[in-house]
Image (cartoon, rainbow, N blue to C red; front, side, top):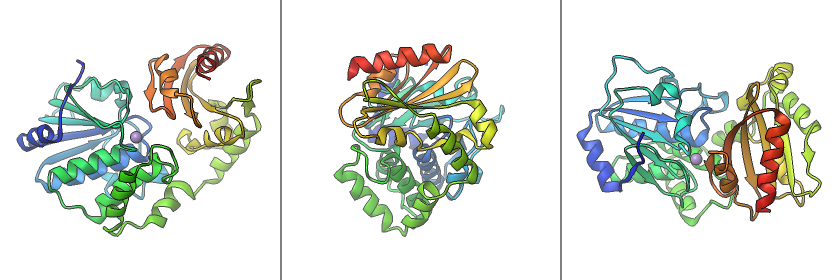
Length: 324
Ligand SMILES: [Mn+2]
């Protein structure tokens, strides 16, 4: 795909007004932001009379199955389908939308809607607002520009996007505008405790077993500034937990006093590690992730590294040390 041209809200409105069938997709292992964003946008575009397909390569994690409309999300594209327009939402790295979407010939003009500062927006067009804490806020602006009326389901979806990407309005990406948007959303009767219960306050027993194993093996670098956890396929097997249930575990190494950078090494398959990075106050982990063809934000980023675990670990920690 070519490097995307920038587009503004008027340009987006124009593209949407000319399109009849629209495809909306988010990244693999979808999170609250990706899912909340595509559901809100999907419902909004349906209100404009568009034919909408919402796609996610991977299934909706249990914790997000409370989101209204999530059961209409498809995980396969119909070969016969033709789209005038496609949106990829919350994609810091285009590859994370998955092979099926990337190879789908009939997706029409492809537009990235995102908030990843240094994301690789290979699409036809790109509407990226790095100051937004979540893609949900980007979607909110699009919906406003299109004069689509918000309802409880859409407001709940966008609120979920915001509350998950800001860690309940705790992270440094949270701005005055984040609160202003959230305030308007709550006026549409979002049940904030229900959202919190599903997103943050519910753990399966398997998740707790996984946490026990992972915390028991947590490591701290000799500098005391880097700490990490490792999630191997064998850990999922032993506990019956799904990879998605490790959501938030990286906050534990980050919470250690004096630690600046936390890492989660997640074994996708033998010799392939999905890496999550978090920093506390000053290290730009997006730069670290970019060194491995990944992307993200200064305080939260990710990349994929292949190789023997010991080598992957060594390479990554050396790259982080350069930033500390
Ligand atoms: Mn996001």
